[in-house]
Image (cartoon, rainbow, N blue to C red; front, side, top):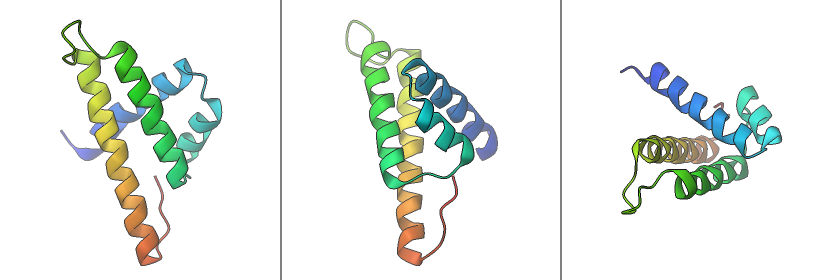
Length: 95
């Protein structure tokens, strides 16, 4: 699967979670691609909350949605790391 298709899948799920949680301001920022470190960290926290509420089976193992949410959190953490690299190199970060 190519990177762009995977990113599209992540963004679809992220937008679903942000809408569900009433995070309209963050939704706009992600849509525009201009994010701060705090924005991405906040998004990770929101996705983590969704994971805890909807992503676990009764035996506390991830269900299919949980696997997708976990993958999304990994993607967001990767973007956070990229933002930090860009900042350290004096480059602009664009999501």
